[in-house]
Length: 212
Image (cartoon, rainbow, N blue to C red):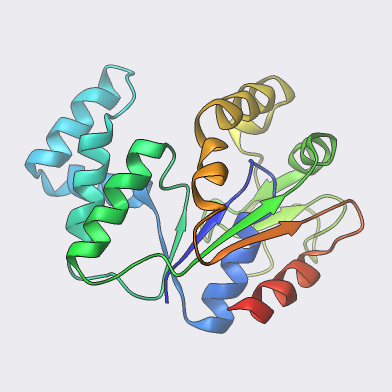
């Protein structure tokens, strides 16, 4: 089974993915990790990707999805797609790639969170730079202040979690990624989860398990 997570920054996709990976045997596909590997290996796609990044430009869909397609050749089951696709064009390319491999996205999980709650969550978010586990100053505190429970690494705030940059990210999400909700909502396997201020990460996880 393959699943896709949709939702704005701060909606809890990362926390949900952590639980699904740890408890249900899923693997998360990170385009950032894939790009870094292609660049390190010096592949044609990696070199092209590096050229755009070094110029401060967005990597075009054809390059991004070319890297994704290479990965999918040997890995196309039990995947979590989070952060990919970001656009309708990427979504259509991804579907075509999966069909070629006799695979598909089985469930699309949309976590719907009001904007004011998103801003509150992101402003208190911390992350471990080593193991990537996320924490929150209010709702998910580490056992020791400022230190990761898993490996003792000092926790940091993501550079793009400042209030000014959060607003930019939410605007980008609304303009580019939110249309994916309309694209998938009438397709089989679409799951709409409303996460309000009283909803916990455990409740969201339990609801997701109920439909998988």
